Length: 400
Image 1 (cartoon, rainbow, N blue to C red):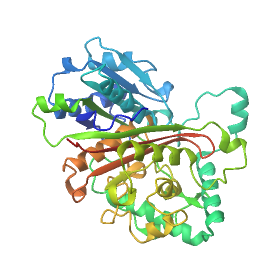
Image 2: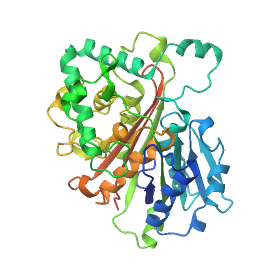
Image 3: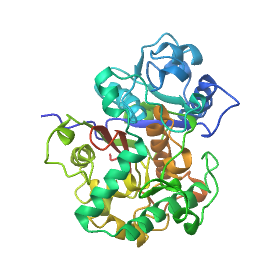
């Protein structure tokens, strides 16, 4: 029976561009910015890289949907380069491909790099892209804020949470992230925002206000992975290794049947269970030190805390208000500012989250540094609550 890739892959180096309205450059320049930091951190020559995975999602504003643009931009040495796209989990999908190649023995040094130039679309949210005619009719009147507002309404109804209570909890989610993002020079938004400002902001889709929604951004992030044995042979100590990489994709049952009540994210629960089993995590609340979730909306972050088994069902809103997930709380969430402060360049977001966990685990997070973290978790969610793809990754200090 398959047991996963726990401790079979070490992260040799990572890099991340500055996120924001990067009118000063194109996708190629963002690729180089993230890659140069990553390669320097890895401490190897580019010619050692023998395979790469490249993630982008919006074809119209990026460098194309093949591996060629990455190879040409970086002048890679004619190695295999695979383009991947899996909605908002695209960056993690690239990392998964690179890690599986190393774990299988097919590659010694594999690169994962994701990039997106969303500001170039001129669109205020994520572009809808091309869809088949019938699907286009289905989503014609659906917006991302409207869809996730329904998640909030279902959560309130199921758990008997008052509107004002949920608003305060969602406000705290956003307040926390802005406090954290103010300490991150690579974040798009780097200013703290007062809670009263968040709660009084214009309504987008009730109960989601302006500050409950993440923004649009440009950015890139990268990782180079290898085996622990090779990393040690290069003089690397205190290795950070991959403990789990799991992906769950909706089969449509959430929207096709009545079993799903709309108050949680089914695929996240499945991916989390699989990831904990692969990593050998028995008690997530005690073992996960710091984590990043896909906070496209504040309600998504709050619900995900329960789906990840870090809060009891129906209690995440209380844990948020109690400061459990603040930077100085029991399990800090979005310690770098999250999507709320970085925005969401789709191809890059999953790798950007892993970059922060990597910095935390190596003690290089500067003013954001958490006390002695052991395990870092990242979560991505692509699509909308009814039909989506969810990924859960866990990294930590290498055992052995």
